[in-house]
Amino acid sequence: MEKNKPLTGKALLQRLNELGSVSRKEAAKLCGYYRITKSGEVRVNLGKFYEAVLAAGGLAVQSSDKEANGQSGRGRSPSYRVKVHQNGQIVIGAAYTKAMNLKPGDTFKIKQGYKHIHLYLIDSEEMDGTTTE
Image (cartoon, rainbow, N blue to C red; front, side):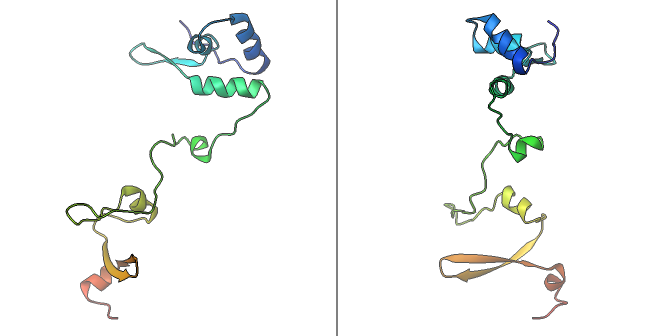
């Protein structure tokens, strides 16, 4: 089975009318929305197929910024809330450390406020004792 360029626009709508009552997965495959894996398995891309059908019908669906940049958009978004674990520890996830450009070994000063805590990054000079407050 050789892969053709996926159908779009009027050609896609015409092909769907010709196919009649086949399954959605089979229709997507017959319209070129599939790929063959290294192991020879056929993988149908229903998402791209649905987007093409909508676009052909005059309803263009814009991709999100993440999808446009090749990011899948999977996973959770950071909530900026943490809980104290049973052992008394607070874990700050990778999404937060990445957003703040933190590196392994960075040290913080913790200041307690009313209903919140502040984390202040301590400079390496301050850790060495060369800077005074």
